[in-house]
Every structure is written in C-alpha cells, then in structure tokens.
Image (cartoon, rainbow, N blue to C red; front, side):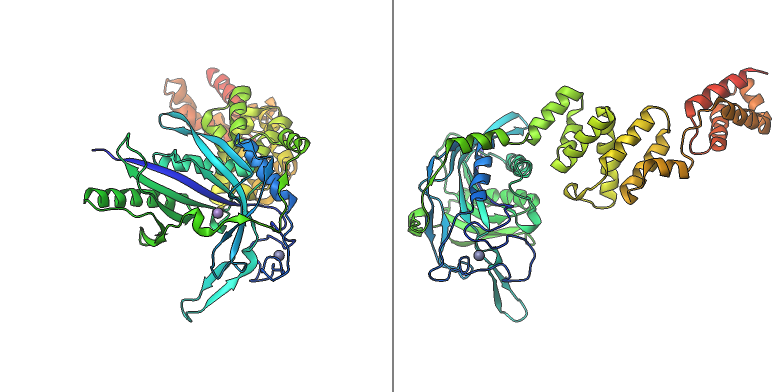
Length: 476
Ligand code: ZN
Ligand code: MN
C-alpha cells in the first residue's frame, strides 16, 4: 500500500527591528558575546518587559500579507521551562490569543497552485545561545540573542512533499524580505524551521508525528524530510510503533536522532504574563499598515509579465530580491526600455554577480549609469560588445560610461567616410580574397568583414561595415 506524507511547519523568523522585543538592547548580529544584554533580557529580578511597538507592527504587516484574521485583543503568555540559555526560566510567547490566525500562503506545485493554511502567527522572544568548546568540554553562554523578537508562523499540516515545503519556504522568505520584516539570512539563523511529519495511508486519520527542530538550510530540510519519511515507514512496516518525539538532524551523518519525548502545551504551564498588558489593536492603525504594505514579489512578477511582456523565468530572476527588482524598475523607467533592462540584469549583471560571488542583497550599482548605457546601445551609439565591456567596467569599478567609452575608443564609428576608407583598404590588401568572393566563394566574406571590423577598432558599426563591404565587392 502507498504511504502519504503529511507535513506541517513551524517557522521562526527573527525580526529586523533595531532593538529587542521587551528592552532597548540592540539586535545586531555578530557582536562580541554578552555585549547586548541588560537586566531585562538577562532575567534579573525586578526588571520589567515593555513591548517594542515595531514588533507588533511587523507582525501585523505579515499577518495582513498572509491573509490572516487579526486578533483585536491579543495577549502574551509565559511558556515555562528551564534551559541554561533561558535566564527567566520562561519564554514570553503567545498561546491563548495569538496576534494572527487563519491565513494562507499560495504556492506553485507540479499540479498547479495550492493554498497552504496558516494556523497562526505569534510573537515571542528568542533564547540565548550555548557555545560548546569541544576541546575543553566547557560550555559558554551568550545572552545577546535573548529577547531578539521572533514571529512564529505555524502552518496547517497541508504539505504532502518536500517540494511543497521548499516552495512554501521560498515564498515565505521573499514575503518577509519584501515586507522588510526579516533579513532572512538562513546562515545566521534568521529563519529556522521545525518540521512536523507523519505518514499514513491515504484516507486514514493523522499518524503519530515527530518534530525535527531548528533546520536552517533548504538542502538539509529536503534530506531530513526524506530521511524521516523513510524511517517512519520502515518502523510501521516492521510492525513497530512510532513515538511522538523531538528529533535533531545531523547533516554530516545524514540522519536524525530522538532528543526527547515531545511534550504537550499543558506541560509548559502556560499562563498570561502578568507584566504585560493585553494589546488592543486600533482600527486606524491597522488601516494605515494595510495601505502602506509594499508590492510583494509575486505581485511584481505578475505585473512585469503583464505590463512589460517579460518572460516568466526572467520575472523570477528579477524578483529574487527587492534590491534586484528595485534596480530593474529604476533602470527600465529611466531608459524607457524595460525588455532591454530586464535582459541586462538577468544576463550580464547576474553573470558578473555569480563570477564575484556577490549576493543580490549586496549588489550596489549605479542605476543611472546602466540606463545611460542602454540608451547608447539602443540609439546605435555603441555596439553590443562595447556595451558589454562598459557594463562590466561600471559593475567592477563604478566607471563613468561616457568617459570610459571615450577613453577606450568605443563610440561607434558611423562616419561613412571612415567606413569606406577601411573597406577600400581591406580590399586593396586582400585582393585575392576579394577576387575569390567575386568568383562565388561566399565564405570569404566573413574573413573580409573581420578585417574591416579590426580596422575600425572596438567602435566599429557592424551593420554599416557590412553594407559598405557588400557594395564595394559588387564593383569590379
Ligand atoms: Zn536587554
Ligand atoms: Mn516558538
């Protein structure tokens, strides 16, 4: 009998607010250990939390973008557990009245579009980090991450394959990026996914699920899903029983192992946090946020295809990051040539970025210079190879296109006299080739053409040169 995989995701996204969720400490990544810590986020007695308004605004932005119901009267709860990276011995989170509920995110699958249900989105604080030193056996504690704001996005168990999970994570990632809510640097742990997975025979109720925690690479997620699906099927087909547990994925070994039996919500003794007032969401504020939401990546893709006639694959590349779509929109507007701008960015610029291992978020290039170059090539002032060369100079040295073109002699030679002179000189120097051509050996034309272009230098106008050469060869 066939097995069906059922997957639900819990995604933790670290928010890109300047300060932490309940204190004024900085959220910046990569500082020395315990440099962004105050009595509040270190769990000192008597220090009280105050909600960072930006966190709530970010949650509302995401909730609206994912079509959620916004909870008008929302509350924070304490989730109690002891772990050395959690100085309060509780995490401030939301259980009873999370800020957003019942949303969805539409993904593209092999068999068409599919809506993945969002059960809820809640706000919570992150825990600190334990750093284990394998040589000394010591463990160090870094509380910088304590109190970093998180949104936890809990999906419904709507996924049936790893492909669907990846499509969802990619779409969620670009949504978070376009909303300016999270920098989505997976290597820094800005997005982490917990995978809840069970298997069943189609039509049956849900099977026993396991949770593989803290996955922060798409590749590892795919492998962990395949592994856990196979493992569960094997246990069940051998007549064994699965236990509900939390598992840790070891990417080097390509396997996961059980960490602890999964506890239920009641084990955490959740109760409303007495230090934080309930939130009452103002309708005007919500309306203002709704109006201020930016155009999202998928909306941009649809618009580019519809308004500019850009291919779907190009539209995907152009919206990979808002830095790229922003560049495209500026260049296409300034140059008035959208297709040309799309070709430039998806072709030459992407190639140069790949060669220098530059990430889309780090691309910094003068849009005005690119627009000017597009004008020069479309107006026939420079040829394609000069265009390409100058784009590269702008990309790597921020060169000034006009100066660079002048300096390198790239301006197209469209002066009839210069072209005629070059053609006549080439024919004079290659009389036997010219005679061959005239006798019907058409292949020689390419060679003669090459000689003319060489004489004209980098600025040669190939169209003009071709016409002049053809004309000159006709005259005997
Ligand atoms: Zn603090
Ligand atoms: Mn959580």
